Length: 452
Image (cartoon, rainbow, N blue to C red; front, side, top):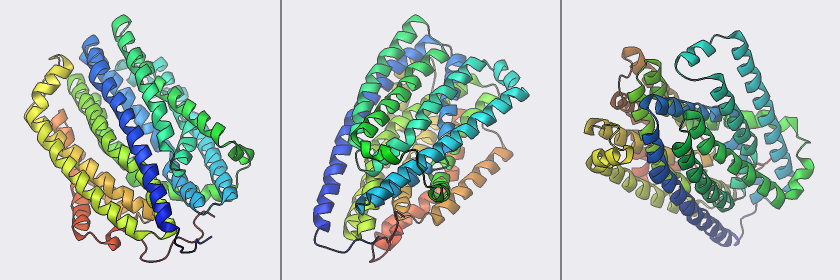
């Protein structure tokens, strides 16, 4: 269905801006609680365990990051299709899309559990993990937490498509407060990697489950067709998902977490722990970017569906200027203030040189910058160029690994920065053009039949 061009577009643009402001302000509250968790609770946890134990926790946290690779990008595809169907006020399409996405997630979850049980049955991986202090009980906890997050994801992604992220953010504030209390309690009473996992990620999983339940309660009419999926939609969702997942989820997670696993595999717990600590801080900083780009994606999709390209172009200019300034500030602050701040953060348990911090700052800035470019291209539905560049990133990183494995945190971040450089240069060139064509958006016509 194609929406006619009417004078209602400016009003809808105002509605979009209000939703963005709600999402950003609520996300600020959520990020403030996350900062409290990272800056208050985690230093206590780091001091309470040995570097080897914290390295184990960090690696298992990385495993949970890889859980999101398993949805094959269905989340972003679901967000985009729900946003378009909502813009077209097509309620039957919304029900079909949500039901198909939920069933697709169930299919993937069953397949992943089957694969995991088969691997455990073969017994090839368990001895290697146990030799490094990762017991089967830890793996089961990770699997349970990942499953809860996985089952909640289609409803949270649909909520994003309705531009209602501010509701989920409020759940995040409460979840972070509980996680901080739980983490401090575990660190004081019985510090262990398992306790930290349950305190941080178990709480996050329950928060996501509660947010998903609240979404379904508010939009109860969608439940009528939840178990009646249209299998004809499942394949297109998978196809869209793979296009979204490869540059947005699969490649970034492999780039970010890969060096950590390489360091852990070589038996370097201190360097693994240092890399993991810096990754935590990178995630904290990236949250400041994501709190804007996460609600921006469905808003851009809505604008694209309605043909409101003036709004897209204005948002494009402001976003690229703001994120560019943030990246420069982050590199400078990391290099100048990093050594003393991190010594205070870790209780002098770890030492971070300026070389490591410069590589970390540059790597983080490239990730932030490339993420913004991806959001605009993703919203337009034209990801071919970023797909190709993401493949090139993996090839470059793999070539560096074959040449020489990372031996410390600095090398790990330097490798990732080198792999990200080509994509960053391209997006910089497109940003300098500041033209709608650089966004990959259609020039004049709204999207037709996108929700079907």
